[in-house]
Length: 230
Image 1 (cartoon, helix red, strand yellow):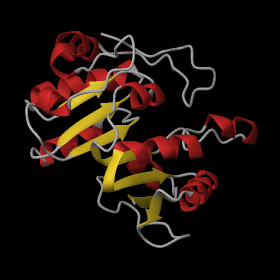
Image 2 (cartoon, one colour):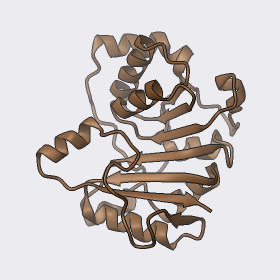
Image 3 (cartoon, helix red, strand yellow):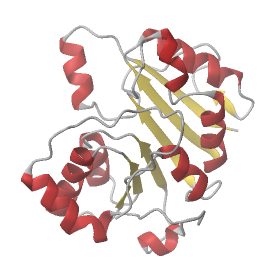
Image 4 (cartoon, helix red, strand yellow):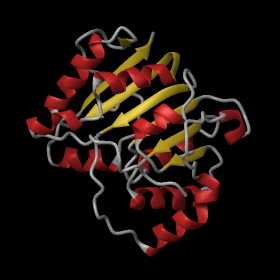
């Protein structure tokens, strides 16, 4: 089991000391051989047909948290293969516990830094859709450089998407939403699905997350963005 690389100088996340339940710990250790994808010691692109035993559409979710939407999607769409990336062990453990309960065969997990996973493991033009839902907003201006959605990161996403593939983002921070819109509207690799300068309808073609439901109860507004890889 290969976990995150702590050597990258600027990371978009902080490893919080979240407590794992005994069930999550057990699920992580027992189910990693089934659902986990280990990081290689040097760049080595994944052969998705070998991993899943078939050729199908592939959806990648970056930073799936506790994995409620990832599990729900994998259950609802057995014809699609799902790949999740997350660094927090409690969420990974919960996803693997639920994947075992529902006997999912269309789900694999990386427990590693997303930037390095993209660089080392994800073949170019091999993903049909990328989800980046509610990434850490790093609200203080001095920390904005830590936000994962930067031009360089968006360019990596474009490289991994098939032509015509979708990049779907959501945030409940307007400042971050405006940054996402500005960055992606400026890149020649992407076209705004709803027109330049426009956000998507909230929850457009995606499952409502537990985090989002809690935010709505507190009166938080949600901004969704959908882009097509040209």
